[in-house]
Image 1: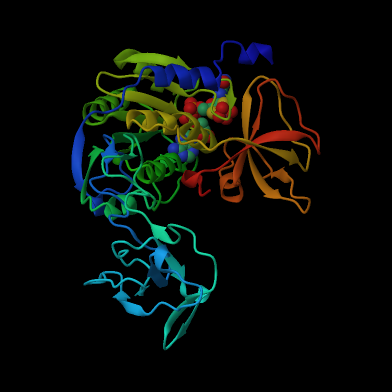
Image 2: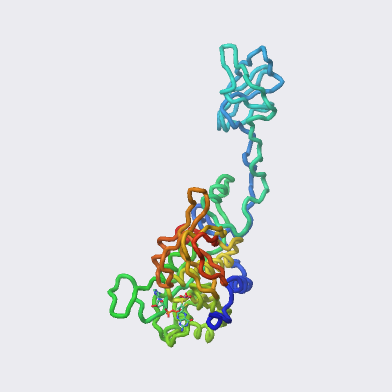
Length: 411
Ligand SMILES: Nc1nc2c(c(=O)[nH]1)N[C@H]1C(S)=C(S)[C@@H](COP(=O)(O)OP(=O)(O)OC[C@H]3O[C@@H](n4cnc5c(N)ncnc54)[C@H](O)[C@@H]3O)O[C@H]1N2
Ligand code: MOO
């Protein structure tokens, strides 16, 4: 085993090496909120107003001045305050104001009593419970103060963030431009979907998978199709991709076969950062720099391509767009319900199905055959079972690390 894994770098080392070289894009665009979903903030967003903008009632009930409370005497109702229609006029001493949720607190009121804690009669309103100063009053600026930073730079805008900006009256936001990513598959055996297969041919899975994941990550995709295992055709694809994109992603041809030209091209047209990782699947992943772009050479086996995209390209794209997170979910521990075969020497990303058992403990089972060509394992799985490099076969009942899939893989 040593013979075949010596010289392979660890996934952590590869990620660190890759991310250390990369600085985020600096091109900024201003977009209307509705067009900004999925985009990344280019700078901190500052609140132009207090939220709430004025003190208002948290309950339907009565606003009062505590000094007016008298256990023996109900308070007559001086008038009403609605959300959008404040109480107008003088407020006579010894009275209260009927108030609805969201209505501005009448000046001088120091508490709101919910109507369930009152009793109304022709004489006025009796307050049945003790009243605390300030109760049921939402103060101006209690959620967000004018001038406060509500989002930092590097935040992906979605359903949690954009409505927040809308609540502040912000109609436009400064975001980074979309990353341009070129993608192509290499291999004489590959056919696009929708064409018949001749003997020895297979359908191109990887370009489709990568395209989908890039779409989900909000990239602008330049799809260069299928490139033959031919140095001249490959060189042309590399050149076109490099002049048009920030990142170039290929699949296939990164191993050591006689038609595996990808790494050779990277070496010729750019610079290899690293090649060959101690991970399974994904060993021959290649990373480097071309003249104008970063290059990621995914292995041809479809599971290997998807796993390396997920574990390496995803954090790379996150760094390029200045995101603070690498977008990978936190790991958890689960008990293996069955034996998991593993050879030592490479960090293994098996596909698994985890759930909580009747004792409330997380448990995980394998999707079955773990070959790098078994793409169906993804559609059954909801997590990776991450088996450390030096670990051997796992026995049923042992604890293992799992990494639940994020939205990119349907998690
Ligand atoms: N002597 C060795 N052979 C191999 C090694 C090794 O270390 N020594 N590594 C193996 C590992 S691990 C992997 S992973 C593969 C990766 O090889 P390549 O990146 O060169 O990929 P190809 O040879 O082009 O293809 C591998 C496999 O995947 C199929 N494929 C390729 N592209 C696609 C695509 N777009 N969609 C669907 N399927 C694709 C291709 O037909 C092959 O079956 O190398 C091992 N070999
Ligand atoms: O790394 Mo390969 O991806 O083991 O099949």
